[in-house]
Image 1 (cartoon, helix red, strand yellow):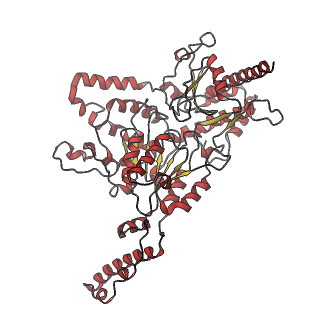
Image 2: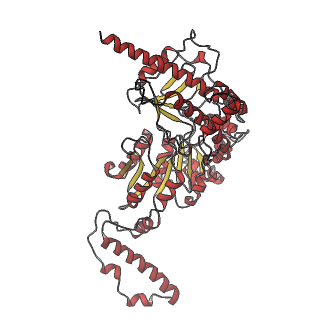
Image 3: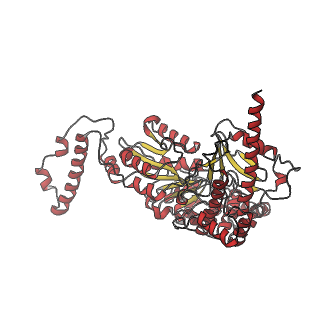
Length: 563
């Protein structure tokens, strides 16, 4: 289903259940939805972990031969079955041919990343020449920021969400410090309204309008990693880019530079008309007649002022939780730059090869600050003359030859994506996550008439156009007690004292995997590539058992303490 469709998932679920003659909560509906799922064959392209292999499962409680419910693709995607085959192919080629593997085989090592660029470009909604596969996400973010973040005396701030992923936050802080800027004054952090968990688009746009004259770069997530909120990428991009800087802290300073620009234009026009600057010679040098004290935010560079005046904010996105999750059209939206990892929804394995994007409009104007051999044009790269012929656009940002083993893993996953479209995946995802939302609200909504009943609140926006596949759940019960009961039933929890200290805090819920981030939040991500509607139904059953038992234990603790 289309995000813009007027038919909501709840309506589809209820109508389908009515046709089946059952309740929308009946497992019969889950079986039916899986049977009608046109993408169900893609599940067979992945290894689904067996319950017996997930430590520390209690095999006295579960059937160890069953597949788990894996709801943590937002942290680490499952392994595509072809990964091992592709790795073995390259290891065998290395063993048999040695160095000749660089330019032979279906994946020549020197060109390995380029062999899968078209597959990646489709998921990003970009042109082939606008993307590169290289490094890790944060490395790419730094490389891009070194070229896109060029603070001036007027534009020197970076705008990002207050709860950005730590790597993004730290990268922006370090970029500001690199330019000698005060982080507190130069980093604009967008906070949700008091009592709210997510950002409103009108608030984002209002800050851009209010602060835009001084903002050099806007860096946002495509999908917010913690809340699961899908940001309106095209509106944020458009708002930032159209925010031209036309004012300064000193009106006289603005006038001075405006006149300087006028004089320059007049000189050029006069020379064109008369062949020499006749009229110019009889006019006083107006720009030099205007003088005023320069504030610290006024530059002596006319070029700097001209650049600020004719360009708005540069807008970039971290798409780690968006690519492979939602439809992207980076080129058509005019996004300036972006980067992403590939081990979440792109299933390339931990630390997989990352992606970077620069819009083609910047291909000649934006150059890399740090240059490596692989940024040299391929046609003359191996002449080894040390006379740089820099590739245009994002290709000039490549530093080293591609890691073939990482390419293999990403190749295997992208081939699965090539069997369908992001539009089809998104259609299933909306209904799959809508099904999860429906069951959570049915069983665990807050009951004002029964304050003793445990409830679950969904932090993620309810509007389908404002979320991907992930739902972030908040519990009325202490989440640790729920996890403890799940652990008794085969739960494996990676302990951490703070929300940001771990990337892979796994909750293996009886049969299932999902992601916990303290305090009291559980991130659940049914991925349309390999998760089923039955997975959702099983998860709800298991979660219900854990909540019930946890509540009973809490009550018993209170009663025993009263004696």
